[in-house]
Length: 131
Length: 363
Image (tube, each protein chain N blue to C red):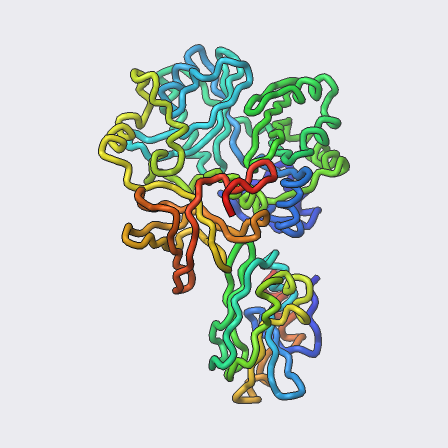
């Protein structure tokens, strides 16, 4: 079974979001998502400074079999993309919640984060998807 | 109701991800597709290809029938068990399917056609075979396992009946042999040495398990696709279909023009296309930067014209993206591919990209 850490928030489209102590939000894809995509071979991360809206496609992960858009869970400014993924896209497969993070956003509106799915709700969404 | 091979339960028990392929529930990957790919390039891997359709053609005039049916010429097949790769064409020159045909004896040829085209192939075969009094028998009672890789034959040979193993190890490339209801041929779809083994369906699960014990890696259709693409082999439905001829699909080498009086189906259309000038060709592409080529992406050849990627993937051996594309015949050594609104540079190369474990293009 895939891991769903209790301290993160999620989107139904399988992104995770972590609220950092400085108020920024780190974003990646869930363990379930990396398993479903298979071996990742290319990741396109957004440039710092870009403004994104919640629900906007702003990164792309490509596995051997398909390309998938990554949606930002919150509106705000991109403050970092994970440059390590350029040479090692497989970090997402190995460590989706750690070294495989994709981007960091400075959110405009804190209430958006609070409205995301918690771990229990995401697990329920996963169960609904597979049955 | 999806179709399932005799190994379906084995794949599910192994945790394979199952996908629909031409109406069949097939394993696309068991664990890591890239590791499965490398297992075949470096050691030995196996694929359940029982979804492919084995067809036995029998009758006194079978050779004559096939010389009419196929763009390649079975007159080349004089050695028992020898195989020939060919396209089967409409009168328009469009490709109905690509296939392998084996010469078994004077009254018997065996053909292997694609799973996704099975029904239309059988209908076409029966229609065309009737005037020759050739019978068309699909062999649903057989499973097929492809064992591929530099160590594939040695690992698999130890599991065959000793008499069969000794003879099978002597098979030259593109030759098969039958014994006791089993058929072993030195063919494949990976660019590596190996065998394709047809066997009674009931015996397939036990044989698969013994191959596992012998250290042969399970490989899904995902790795089969990256391996065939590295090997520069076409996939029917992607790289050619009924709207394209072999001449614009990198398959001119499979069309036997000699002897000139052999009137195979589609010959007149191909000859007319040849005379008018073939306008498109199928080429290999290597993407220079990051990203992954995918089928249907637009190809732009500056000051020449446009084309389309027909197959694309990430090559685990080259560690970059490769593909096949249909482009204007004047295309030179470079082009651009539109990926997510951006134009990315690609080199135009002659496939194969990889053969027998080695990179076969300039990089």
